[in-house]
Image 1 (cartoon, rainbow, N blue to C red):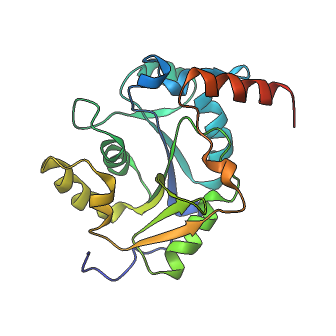
Image 2: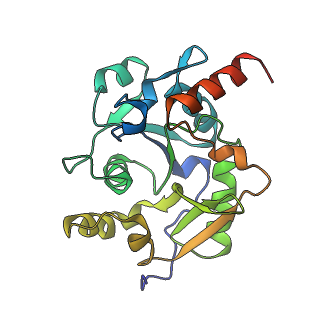
Length: 210
């Protein structure tokens, strides 16, 4: 557990948070496709996520390890992992924290296009209430650890963790004070598109209207 009992100043709020869309995975269940660039209802999936996240944060980054030019052509600032070999979401978080100009960052996956408009505010409220260093989202049944608000001050800890060959997100969480924000009233925030069947189902739903 971290010995530092103080939250970074200023506290988390829209003007102190960088939004990070995690798009650095292999997309193995989608046949190796870059999920952020998969078309969904006429737009790349990353654009659906960005449209919902951008109003909640000051800056927006995409963490991606391939197709940098395509993401940049969509208007995104792109950061790649600073360690090679698709090392998982913590590597993407570390790269984003290194690039962020704000004291806080919030991460979401590129394959969850229905994130709620209150996601960042509720993560922030939970973190402040529990005097924590990180806040993770929970849908009432289970945690969703890549829906995460974290302090940029944790970058040295995360860098050291990765340098030691560690990759498991729960093992890194165990070193710090973690708050839980419960979203039992809005579980669709965490709907994700992992494979072609899920993609077809959501595509049909979005095209049919509200």
